[in-house]
Length: 176
Image (cartoon, rainbow, N blue to C red; front, top):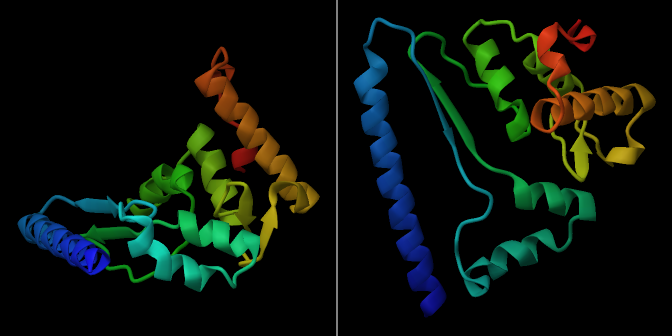
C-alpha cells in the first residue's frame, strides 16, 4: 500500500545518507590532524500519519513524560580519528557544543561551562527533563538545586539572546 512504498522510499534515503557518511569518514580516517564528525538526526521522519501509526501505537502505552521524550529523541553519531568512543550518552541538543568540546579535550567555560554543568545534572532539558540518574520529571518537579541551576541557565541564555550580554564580560560562577 501507500505506507509501505513511503517507508521503502524513506529507508532507501537513509541508506544513501549512510553511504555518504561512510564516504566522509573514509576521507578523514587516516588524516594526521585530529578530526571529529558529529551527525545529528531529526525528530520523527517526514512520513505520513499512516506510515507513523505503528510508532505512535507503540508509544501509546508510555507515560506522558516518556512519550514526550521518545517523540523528541534524535540520533547523534560522533566519530573521531583520534579517540574511539562507544558511549551512548543522552543529552539535549543545547548541550551538544559543550559535549563536543569535551570530546576534543577542551574545557568549556562561560556559558558553555554552565551548559556542561547542566548536562551532568540534567542531560535532557525540555517540558520534561531527564536527570543524570535517568528519572524523568517536569521542570517544576526537579530537586531545588537543579531548578536553581536551570534558572541560572535560563537567565544566561536570555542575557545572551535578548539581553545586554552581561554574561560575556566574565566567567560564570556556576561552572565550578
